[in-house]
Length: 233
Length: 389
Image (cartoon, rainbow over all chains, first blue to last red; front, side):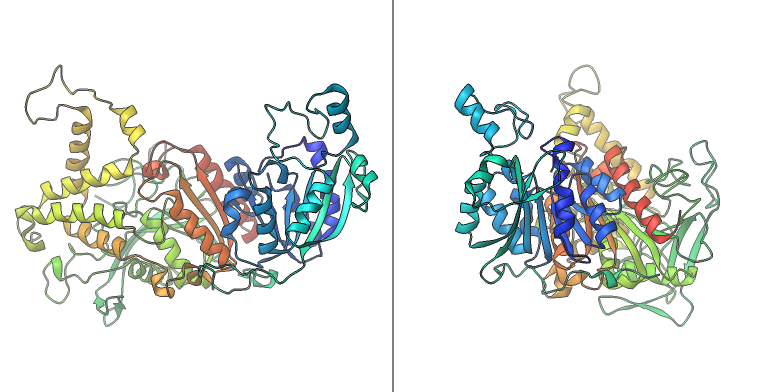
C-alpha cells in the first residue's frame, strides 16, 4: 500500500517498530511500500520478513531488494496467509484507509501473534480545533489532503480504536504517541489528555483468547521457513 | 541448417552459444507417469553462456506449448529472434556473461527431442500414436537427466511462462533441492475446464483432418496441415485479449468492400489464417496432441492430496517470483494467486506481481517493461544472494 502520509511523518514509527520487534522473528508488513521497513528489520534484527503491497511498482522495488513481497491489499488478500504464520503483523499508517478496518485488524491477529498498528489520531487538538473553530474538515500535517481527495476513509481517535480492540477481545500491550520529527513517546492511551496530544499513535496488540483457526482446508499445517532453512549451496 | 544462430546486431553479443542433443545411454529408460518406460530418449537443447567453476550459475528456461529450445539468438527455421530474446542477452535479466542458460525442447516436442514424430528405436519407424502419453512431470524428469548430463547439480534459477511456468512449479515440487530460485510467468497450477475445452477443440480439428490418418501420417507425403492450422487459429484467440484484437483489427476489411462469400474479408480472419498456415511449417500435429494432453493432465495439487501447498513444503528455501497479466484470460491472475496462496501456506518465499497489460496471455512474450523490471530486480537480488555478481 502506498504511504498515505508524507515520508517524513510515516518514518517516526519505524524506530518504534524496530524497538518492539524481537530479533530473529517472522514479520509480515502489510502495505510495505518499497520495502524500507522490511529491509531495516532484516538487516538490524535478522527478521524473516514478508510483505504485502498494493502497487506493482512498489512490489517490483521490493523484489529488487531481495524481499518476498506479494501484490495485494489489506482488505482482500490477507486471507492468503495461513493462521499463526508470523510473530508480528505490521500495519503502518494504513488502517484508516482500508474499507473494513475491523476485518483487517482481526485478520492481522489471525495471521500473527501480535499486531503493530499505527494511525493518525482524529482526536488530536488540531483536528478538534479545525472542526470546532473553522467548521471544516481538518487539513493538518498528519492529514494533509482535502476531504474529497483523502484516502483516509475510516478515521478514528485513540478511544475509538481502543473500543474496537476491546470489541475484538484484543489486549493492548503497548502504545506510543508519534509526533513528527520526535521520538515515539510511550503513553497510557486510557488517559484523555493523550487523546488530545497524540498526532498519531502506534499500538501493539495481542489476542486475549486462543488463536482462531481458519476453516479452509487449504492450509497445509506447516511451520513457515526459518532462517536456518535458507538455501546453502 | 546448423544449430548455430547467425549473428545479427541483436544477438551478436550472445556469444558462447552451445547446444546439441542429449541421448539417454542404451539400456536406460525414462520412467513415465503413465507407467510406460521410454527408451532412446533424446533431448535437444541450446545453451547461452558458460557454466562457472562453482557450477552455481545455471538457469533452465522452460518453453510454452509451441515454443522450443531457441529462447535467444535467431531461430534456425523461422529466422526470427528467439522467443525470449528480450530477456536473454548481455545486460538483460538473464545474462550469458553471468549465467549459464539452458533451454531444451520438451519431451513430446518436435524440434529434436523425443516425440511422436521421432523414430521408435524398436521399430525404426516414427512413433506416431504409439508414443507414450506424457505429462509435465515427465518433461521435467527428462530435463533433470539433461542437467545431470551437463554436470549441473543445482540451478540458480528455473524460469518459464505459460506451460513453461507449469514446468517450473513441477521442478519446485519434484526437485526442490536442485533449485535456488524460480520464476513462474502467466501460468497455473492446473488446467481449468475452459483450458481443457479449448485444447479439445484443437485436438478435434487435427483428428478431423482426413490426412491425420490416425496419427500415422509421418511415413506419407501429406500431413494434417488444415487441422493443425485450425487448432492454432482457435488457440491463438486465447492468447490475445478482446481489446488487443479490437485495437489491432476492429472491423477493418482486407479489400475494398465485402466479397459476399467466404474469403477472408476481415483483416482478423486473414491474420488468423496466416497464424495457422505459418504454424504448420514449424510444428507437428501429433506433438500438438501430446503436449496439449500433458497440459490438460496437469494438476499439481492432485498428486499432493488435493492441497497445493503440500507440493511446496520441501521448497521453503526457494525464492519464488510469480507474475501474471491483468488481461490474460487463458491463465488469469486468480490462477497465479492460487499458486501464491499455496506458497504462503507452505511457508515459502514468494513474490508476486500482477502486471497491467491489455495484450492478453501473449504479454509474457512481448515488450512489457514492468515484467522486465520485476524480473531484472528479482533476479538481480537473487544473483547477489547467490554470489554471482
